[in-house]
Length: 231
Image (cartoon, rainbow, N blue to C red):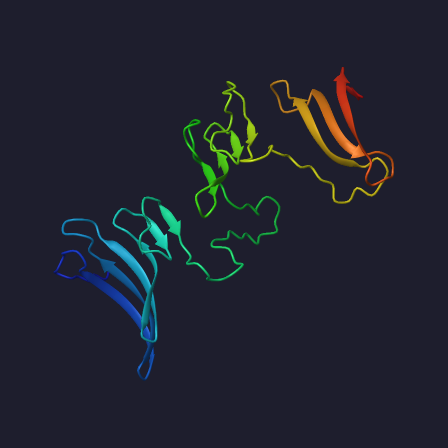
């Protein structure tokens, strides 16, 4: 058994609601949970609204297709859409995932499980004007500044593609505290796992300070012979 609120009218726009108010004279503040009919014979939508004085503002809705909109009454084809109007909450983020757990192996953030092949997009980051900044496809290839990583189609390869619209793509490796002689500034390491989890072969390219002078640098190339690295 439970509580049933029923409205015998079921044309589009008909609704039932639970409203909770606090009132002080003519001033009314409160919240409402509204079940509204989308169209005759179709599934309804659920609306969460808040009221301050004489103004009612919708906060969230679940539409007749099951899509969720926060700050928008038209979540479209996305399962969840969060919208914030221009000029609101300057400098703040629209959404944030915060895990305050300090216990080891319990401070995880976001897991995305999606993608069967290169035609799927588990993750994409775009600008407000819809320019793609970052794309990860279902084959594990990553594109920065491009929607088509691994353009040469290397079979079985996992690639990182960096594209600039007007200049060369750049990877920057920085050491903020390279204050000792010959300190490393950054490195690229190539490893062989030999079908296991242990590294059996290595090759390195290292950028480093050349002596103690902060604006003199050098590149070091290392290869391994029987497991021993040498320049």
